[in-house]
Image 1 (cartoon, one colour):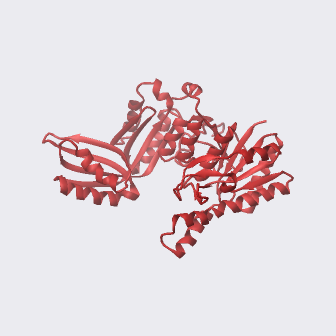
Image 2 (tube, rainbow, N blue to C red):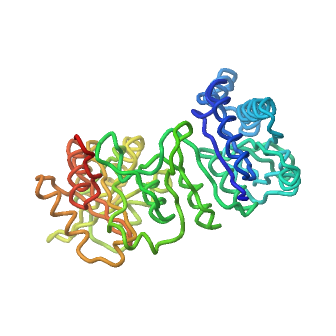
Image 3 (tube, rainbow, N blue to C red):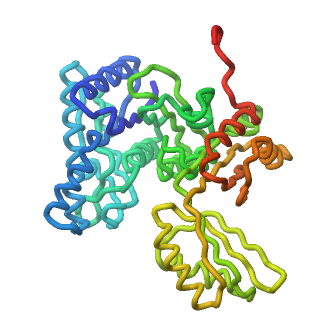
Length: 411
């Protein structure tokens, strides 16, 4: 008998019909002999609806009270699923984050889990009940309701799995696993049977929306095996694990991630003096703007050109800050580009294979795609290119690194 934590997202519980389908799936697992803890999100769109209600009262809701209202979404779904399970003859009980005692810090709207009291859950499991827990929420030391921010329900699921030492944490969503890249861009993309936490972290940080970064970090820290599965289609999904041994025998590259939400800024003719990087990036950081890739080139006239990328939503704000900096330090000009994209190859196999970056550059060169910026880490190579070449680049790299799925008979 295995102890499984199952998490179902908003689309999985988006209607009564879907909640009934989740109940059937949970019943099937329970009848197979597994002990189950089920973590639920609110119905899809419900959290946004509740936030909109709050903003009809005030443009800036008090964070504590906002947590009180948005946490009610999960309270509805856990009660409905528990009713559906009981109707099917499956003993079940629902708990809010407060009732389980998921203790968090007091950072409302983005709280972090500090501790979980698992005694109540263990007692219910021992009595043969399925335990249904509200995701996304907890309680601080003052008894105030808190919420965990974006991806919070995934984090709740992983944290419960860690506290209970579960055999597996299963994340049910609207895709049937993690793919080598987005199948909408590359129809030949393959579902991966297994991927490491490191690779999944890179994929998530680079734009793959399958899992939230926080939940993957948590799972990696506590070595909780994660499995991504489709809510309403049968299949093995993708296992995310710490084990690299099998991965090392598979292709060098596990996947290709990309991000369209990039923008580039360059400050030209900067006096090449010590501390210039801080003078440029200090004000950007002080404005709470996150910088991604950075390149600095020194010219013959003792000036430097400094280029960095930011999220496209932050472009205008960053440009304004940079223009002020340019005037203060006597730089020649500031130029920008919002029509760029980032493409990255990811794989733990890079550690044991030379020439991966050059193979990437060769594949792009064959398609006459110019590389504007390059960034590397132990298991990742990222490049910035013109946005109009993004899909061509992804398809070319997918083929170059032999990630294309073999054609089925008759195709």
